Image (cartoon, rainbow, N blue to C red; front, side):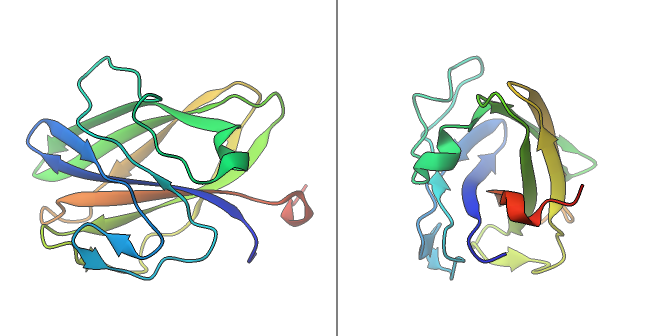
Length: 158
């Protein structure tokens, strides 16, 4: 599945403030990180509750960005673990077969439990909104990245 389109969302949380940072192909937070080809960044400045996310988005994957956008991001701390719900909305009239995966980082930007977060399936029917839940694996988590990729039709299993 080499040639999949991807969207990436990176975020840093500090208390109740959410700061989403653009992810480039080689730079993440203050350190360098290799990112698979075809990964695109979605980033943002400070987002206050109720603001439209589209005015903050920086999208580098034109095809997938025409079909999908973030409509809401909610975070909280539950038992010292970062918990989040990201609302992904399809603007496409057909079903999107997607996969998503979280990567968790500590306050220095190092990956926590690398490779342990599996790709999870997500089917979005035409114009549907779905909540993508995430729960940090440890209280040390200070930020996260969410990768969303479209599964090409030739890989569909019916």
